[in-house]
Length: 199
Image 1 (cartoon, rainbow, N blue to C red):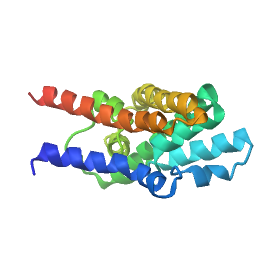
Image 2: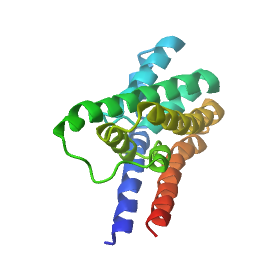
Image 3: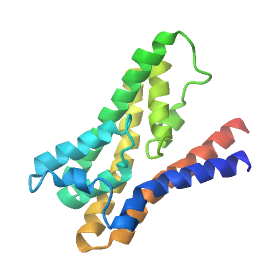
């Protein structure tokens, strides 16, 4: 299988994994975790943001969690918690790379470009790998935070807007389609940029 086709298959499988529990048992991944908050919006936001922060180290379906935050809390509060969780996770990944991998004394083959850092925010696995690599390569922390803040704002905005607009009205199809489309779109744009850069 050609490398490009293999990469596309890996991304497709990664994007479908969060949907499988919903198809099989009728429950969105993360609903059970978030249901512990009950009717408390603050606790719901804290749990959702915490799950998104943990995504850098654990297999948390960030697109689904972000969508649920928008559906439950509304666009603006959901955006705040989703963006905050994503930023904390990015900072944790950067710290892990800088403190652990940076001490190995070996330079990685190539530090992530700012374009890759920006476009990788919604892409599963790649986003986490790039944040850790940025830390290991000692990319300037203010630059790292600024680029991640912009990318995460767009990503979190798409998720929470979708959740707030569609899920409360029972339109789970469109509500799930957007969270799955955003990572795929980010990956496709990144591949195009990478191809143009190597051409």
